[in-house]
Length: 415
Ligand code: SF4
Ligand code: SF4
Image 1 (cartoon, rainbow, N blue to C red):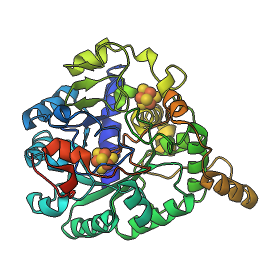
Image 2 (image 1 turned 90 degrees about the horizontal axis):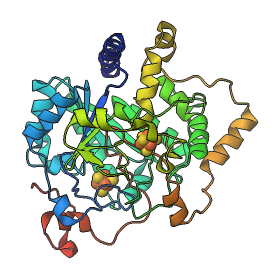
Image 3 (image 1 turned 180 degrees about the horizontal axis):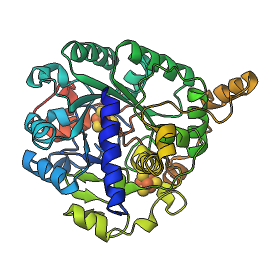
């Protein structure tokens, strides 16, 4: 059985078990952020803008394992920040994949892996999830550093030759074109990437660049145009029903507890993308997160910050629950089949959709954008959002390491 099918089987069984036990809310993917520091400084990033003392904080390997046990989700996504610069990352991965037997996405921008690849051994539960926001020019602009795309492609080849499972994680912004994304998916397929995750970007309030996030209507246009004629061989790693939701063919309510986040501050509520503006956005235990959060306050139509959200971390769990609700849905929506457009676009409509999806977005002021932020990429992978202009130096790294920003080189560092 291929890896997406193995994950689907494990998750499907877990969801059915919880439904039989009549549990109303249960987690599917634990988002684990053992640190917020990163060796890159993408301007759209919602994680690295914290002050130096926070960027220096780390969850220990033991705390990470405890979070996995507490949460109980069958899949874990280790993100950040850049998890490979955590000096206990090897221990964390061992505890999660081997001791706790969880499917684990180890999310990375790739650069630190060049030096750390020998520390890891292929493992059926370990998937390296590489952040790639598009082809060379787009990705290097996105991460504010030339040459990163080529490094990541070389790493994908190296990881595959060593027998590792490899995924890519792509955040879509308004300057992505459908044509480029098709080219990207074809290229990743040729590289024998096991899974590709694509997700609309979420307008993190802390991200300096607020101009390039997709709103709901543009997200739907983009995915409709992209998936109107999908290549059957693309290894997309989303449930079919979630892709249909992105195409505007299904409506779901957000289920933010499906992808809970344990970060250096504790358990974040309500979701991976947004810390509540109410008192106590973080709680010390998973139990408190589940039992003491007023979930009715969140989701599109309920909260300003959720208005444009179609994020994986809010809506994939809704789609998966729908998939296992009924045997027919399981046949129709079984992961990882590609969605079928409800009605094939006529050639002229397809061209119009492509033009619409590829047209530059109307300018929005930063203030308006913050007031009505868009969606996420709480994807397994560095889904922190990373588009837009670049900062002049790598301040985040300098802050996290105490080094001089002017001499920062983006070289991986251990902490
Ligand atoms: S978007 Fe990812 S790679 Fe870029 S600075 Fe943030 S954590 Fe690092
Ligand atoms: S709609 Fe999006 S931002 Fe709002 S709670 Fe759900 S996942 Fe979080």
